[in-house]
Length: 155
Ligand SMILES: [Zn+2]
Image 1 (tube, rainbow, N blue to C red):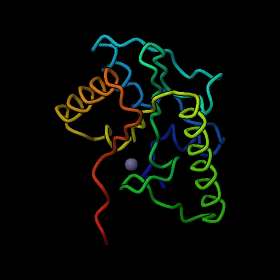
Image 2 (tube, rainbow, N blue to C red; image 1 turned 135 degrees about the vertical axis):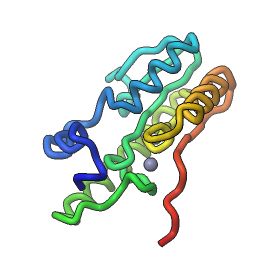
Image 3 (cartoon, rainbow, N blue to C red; image 1 turned 30 degrees about the vertical axis):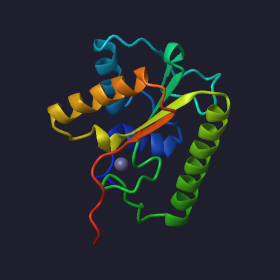
């Protein structure tokens, strides 16, 4: 696992705490702030505690850690120790994501999901383009958007 997740993620994995204020999240936050968007953070009154809430735009943003949420990308690798434990954990996290998402959509929220791999280790110009895309989505009336990095190549 050592080369897949950073120190902070590893200690969260051990303690079972959900990741907050991760680097990808900070990049999204400062980029949107610079583009004039205002938001609140980690509102626990909303299902799934979205990382950012923009009520003015009717929008919620989730920044998903690829390891933590079991993403199909190069940042995810099933841990070799206790694989059954981890499989169950990732399945639970994914089920929680899906159920929170369904509830929030039903409540009329628009939802943007940004995967860590869309931001992490990406060239600066790609991140800037991503932030512009997010800004355009926020100003639109589109209900959902999911942004991810390159797919894992087939073995
Ligand atoms: Zn990913």
